[in-house]
Image (tube, rainbow over all chains, first blue to last red; front, side, top):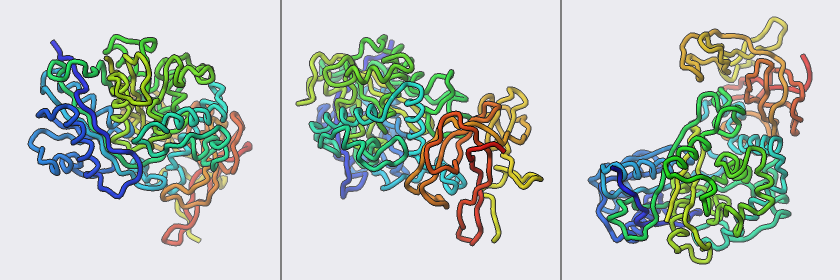
Length: 376
Length: 133
């Protein structure tokens, strides 16, 4: 017998650039989530972060006088928040605890980010340029799926239009295809506005046994994390999934299959999606990897408006990372909070009708991919 | 000026003055890897042979990097991409063109001067350049 698991409370610190420490931002998010959940006691803490250093979660809980429980700091690249949520969900589902606190905190370095992932020779040789790997992935999508630069710009236009109405977003102005294509070319075909900004922020979620949470609290139907299969990232330590062997499923696809199986749902059951739009092409690739369309058909899905507000699967109603920016540890949790708020009828001006089932997807270095399904 | 390989064991100098990239072929499953690795990333075997990789390939993906990434010793802009060797192995590489190279374009391996390091040595790495050797 396993427990039904609920999102009992959520809290966000805005995403952007702030004159605050990562601990202070974490304190804000945790306080808000605990208050939202009615200040329950909790028996486990999972803290997602990549760049916050040793015992980052302990510092946040320490500042609040809430230490004593197990506190585990979790790193899984861009999917860190999804990984922490999976651990918390499993802890509650299995009966290991009644209530677990998940937080994600990040204060990203500025500029192109130096990553310990790359060996020094790769850095010296110019092979550690993260946006260039994104650009190669975009090039491949253009070749295999007929995506154009205008399609890439359209993703930015779609997501930034939603970001206007999200008070935690870093960028809250709408844009146009022309303006996106006029922004500086970073790595062909990606222009500056097609890339999300690494930034700062925090998010927290109280994960609780459903029978202890308020009755209509959204449920966590599945929370899955997967890494890449052998061979699926070129076989010479290419740091990103997406540039993959053709016949080996990507980490995102494996995670999505596992999540659909756990939840007993398929793509047709989804009412809304939050997915990894680190760059505009990454979102389009996710359409194919998550099974919204067949491989090669993502251009049609986008051009039909199927993934825009009012479409079959509205994607990134939060504005996505292209509006919010990406604080690695916090970004996946903010997606899950958007789904929970939509399903809970608490999404304010962004609220859509009949939001019953939502899927959140994050993928990044490792490769790591997390897929979480939230239901009414 | 003294020259230094960016990393020992990535490639060797050939008798004709050119370079050869060194890779590993797994003796259990035949999987190819670059650079040389002690374990096979496909099957985990520790039995592998170090081999010379092909000097000729075709362009699989390319872009141009306009901002110098952290630690990079060379100049921007520079070509960057993936070359596919006849054996099927795909390698991340610098590309000597400063513009996007078309899919399938024949490429040949070249030694590439990156720049001078803090010790005053010219650091060299591998790159691929359009053309046949």
